[in-house]
Every structure is written in structure tokens, then in C-alpha cells.
Amino acid sequence: MNEQATRIDRRIQAMATRLSRSLDTNMRNSFLPDATKELRRFSAAEAADLIGVSLDHLRKQFFNDKVELEVETDSRGRRSFTAEQVDTTRHIIAQDSRAKKFQYLVPGRRADDKLQILSVANFKGGAGKTTTAIHLAQKLALDGYRVLAIDLDPQGSLTSMFGLRPEIEFAEMGTVYDAMRYENPVPFNDIVRKTYFHNLNLAPAGLLLSEFETETAHALRHNLQPPFYQRLALCIADVENDYDVVVIDCPPQLGFITLSALVASTGLLVTVVPSMLDVASMAQFLQLAATLMETIADVGASPDWDFMKFLITRFEPNDGPQTQMAAFLRTMFGDDVLTQTFLKSSAVSDAGLTQQTLYEISRSDFTRQTYDRAIESINGVVSEIEALIQSAWHRKDT
Image 1 (cartoon, helix red, strand yellow):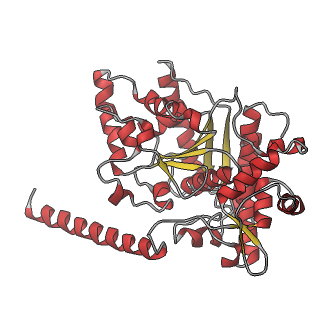
Image 2: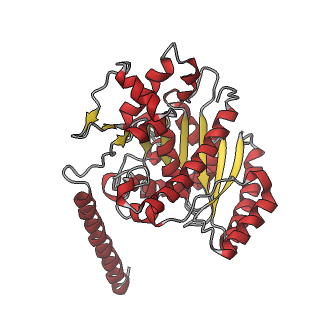
Image 3: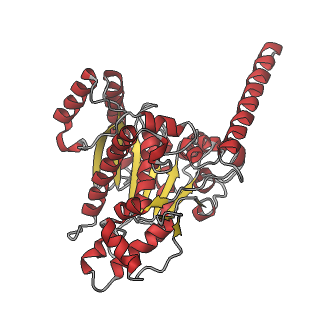
């Protein structure tokens, strides 16, 4: 390496180090005192909404001593619940022999239900994949599903949203790569981490995950087994009894990593911003995906999807061109486009500045109209996806 190249390399490294340290300091300041994230408590009204009962019904459970929980109560007698207490209350209500109609409140898998594995994918960055994936995973967990979030993007954005620092904590080991790699893979459960979110675990990502792309090219030449398109599916199979739903955040490219996710999945969610450039990029994504999926289908790797849906993200209803493009997508793909949209909102972007989601921030942190509009949007999206999951399980009682 010549002297000029060496100077450039050192300068870039210094910039990376300085930026990483600054971000780490910012995170520690944001999550004091112990530099780890904690989930806020939920009001009684929020708890009732998450469980799926009326506030009056929830109150009666406590007044009649049916629920024995040490729920925090403020000076005005208002109760607040942890996410775990919400889930415990959900199960108590569902098991009440005099409330058979409430058994549907526990929505997870039953004996014959297969694990639902949902990949969130697109060819283009900035299409809202990670934002969608984390809100989806968190809301499903709050709704009573046992959820595993898998970060397959070497940039580790989903991992960072859980308050972790991929470039620091997973610089050498501890990511999905360790379980998927060809040489000396570790058991998948060894890299899965509990999060501060009840019912939600994480399989983190880091820059080392990008090695899977280059190693797979070598593996294909030498016919290393199992092949790349089976490796993630086999990882998930090792832990499938522990979860109801897996949510995978794919990288913004259609390489071996994304293909392994598509093969493992039971459902695909393609995010798209309703603009000409984004839709044109999605068209290329679909064309390339079809070609590659056809290629690996020749060796018996056809995916078994219960559904494939398009989700319109970063949507601004008052933007004329966006509205026209959204209508165009619905004309082209009909029911394959989710009815609900993920609206562009300052509440989402502002929460993201401190690596939080709409479910982690309080309504009081924003103007009510801004928060309510944003939370109604994503709740609608998750509700529609939940219906698809329940349909895949052939549920008739929800």
C-alpha cells in the first residue's frame, strides 16, 4: 500500500473510531443509569387495549381479586403495567372458565400450527424495512405472541434499535453469522439474546455477517453442505418450539443472505415507498428475485409462502404524486397490497433519534394528534398481518 493510500486508510479508521465512541457515549447518556434499555409501563387503558378487552372488564378482574399482581399504583390510584404483567393478565382472563369467549386473547400457536417466519425485504435502502420489522415484532410480542427477531443486515440497524452496539459488542462474535457460517458453526440458540421486551428475543447482526456472501461463493465451488439456502432454515428449526412468529429484517440487496431468508420464510412482506424511483427499484427487485428463486428451485429449494404482500411505507396521504402511485400499485397488484399503510410521521422519526419505537415512547412525549395518527397507522398494519398469520393457522375463532 502506498503512502497516500495509507494516510487515507488511517484517516477513515480515525473517523470511524471517533464516530463510534461518540455514538456509544450518546447511547449511554440516553439509557442511564445502566446504559441498557428498559420498556416503559403501560396504563390500564393501554393494557386493556393490548389484551383485547374493555377497560371495565380489566378493572373487574382486579376488583374481584381474579388477578393477583403487584401492579404499580400512583398517588391517584391509577394502575400501570409492565409488558409481562399485561401478558400474565391476558392468560388469566383467557383461562377463566366463566369467560370462554375470551380464550382467543392468547393468539399464539397451537398443536398443529406451523411456525410463521416473515421476511421484510426490498432491494432499496430507505424503504422502511427495519422500522417496519421492529414495530411488527414489538407489537406482536405485546399482543401475546412469542417472537424472535432476526437481524440479517450486516449494518445491524435492527440490532442497534434494541440498544446494542454491533461494532462494539459483536465485532468478533455473537451474531447470526456464527450460526450460519460454513466452518465450525455454533448452535443458533447460543447467539439468540433476550431483550427488554417481554416475549421478544433477538438474533443480532454485525459486519461479520457480510462474510457469509463471500464464503458462500467458495462453498458453492466446493459443494459444502448444507447449502446456503438451507442454513438459516436449519438454524430456525433448532429453536422453532420456542416461538410463534419469526420476523426477519433482510439487507437492502438480493444476495445469498436474503435468498436464505426467502427460502426459510412462510410469508414475505415487501416494503415500498410510493414514488417512481422506489417502485422502479422494486420492479428490478421482483425480476431478479424471480430469476434467482427459479434457479434455486431447480435444486429443490422452493419457498412455501402462505402469503406475499406489499406494504406502502413512508406514506403521506396529502402528497398528490404519492397518492397516485399508491393507487397505481393497488391497481397493479390488487389484494396483494396491504390495505393499511405505514404513514410517514415525525413521531416515528423523532423516536428513532433515541433508538426507540412508537411502543417505547409515551403518548405524552408528542402532541396527541401526531402520536395517535402514527400509532393508529402501524397498529392497523400489524392487525392486518396478524389476520394473515391467523388465516395461515386456519383459525375460525378470531
